[in-house]
Image 1 (tube, rainbow, N blue to C red):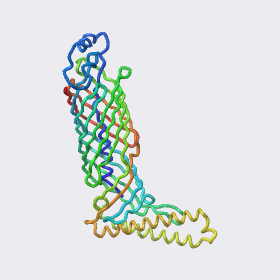
Image 2 (tube, rainbow, N blue to C red):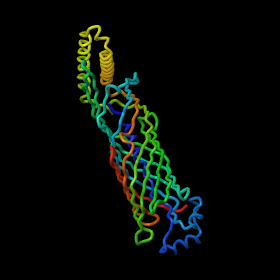
Image 3 (cartoon, helix red, strand yellow):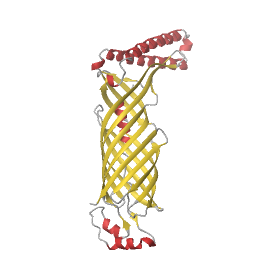
Image 4 (tube, rainbow, N blue to C red):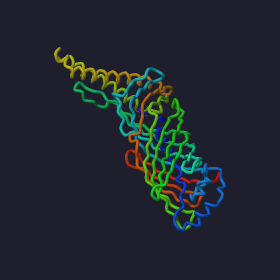
Length: 373
C-alpha cells in the first residue's frame, strides 16, 4: 500500500532549507584600521538593511542587501506512516493500521529552487522560496493477519515505485550573530508544496541552526566559510488524497496476490473458530482468551473486507481510484549537516552542503548573486 504523491511532497519539503551564508562582519584588528576608518566616514549608498548606514559607520562591513540563489538539492529519506485508512471508488474507508506494516519506505528527490532574499536588518535576512522537484517514491508494505495462537503472518505484500512532480512556495528568515570569531545562523522557514493528487498543499516548518567561521584569503573580497549544524523538519501530519489505482499496484500480479490473501484469511478464520469452539465455557471467559479472540476476529474481518473490496476494484482497474487518509512523519526529525561556501567576490558565491546520520542523506550545490538595494 502506498501514498506516493503525499510522500513525494514530504521529501520535497526537506529540500527547502537552503539559506545564504553571508552576514554583517565587524572589522577589527590593527591591520584593518584603514578599512574601519573608511567605513566610519563613508555614506552607505543603499536603502537596506534598515539602520545600514548607522551600523556601517560603527565599523561593520555589510554584505550587499539583496540576493538571488539557485540551488540543486538531492535527498533520500525514510518516512513513517500510521493511522492509515484506504477506500476504493469513493466507497467507505477501511482502517488498516492494525494489519498493514511498512518496511523501509523511502523517497528520493531532486529539487531545483530559486530563493530571492534581502537583509531587512543588519542581523536579519528574509527570503522567499520557489521550486520544482522530481521524486521517486519506493514503498514496501505487507498485510498481516493472526492465527489461533496469535502468530501474525504476511498474506499479501506490495512493492512499488512511482515518479511525481511537485511545486512549492514559501518564505523564511535567518537571524545571525557573531560568536567568538565565528557566526551563528538560525535559519527557519515555512513552505507549502502542491501535488495534483493531494487535496491541499502539504505544509512544513524547517529549523536549521548552523555554527561557522569564515576565513579570509589574500584577495580581500574572497573568503571561504565552513560550518556545521543540524536540520529539523516538522510536517503537517494529517493528509487526505485521491489517486488512480494503477498508480498504487502492479496490475500484472495484483489479482493473484489478492486471491492468495483471501484464501489465507479464510484458512486463519477457520483456525480461530475451531480454537474458540474447542475451549470450555470457563476458558472462553478467560480475559486473555477473550482479547486474543476479539483481536483475531477484528484483524481477519478488516483484512477480508479490504481484500474483497480491492478484488472488486481490480475488475475495473483502468477506471478505479483509491482514496486515503493518513498521518505521516519523517523517521528522524533531526540530522547532522556540514557545509562550505566560497565567496569569489561580494557579488558571487558558490555553496556545497551535505547531510547525514539518522535516516536522511542529502547533498546540495548552489550559486548566489548579490547586489545592493
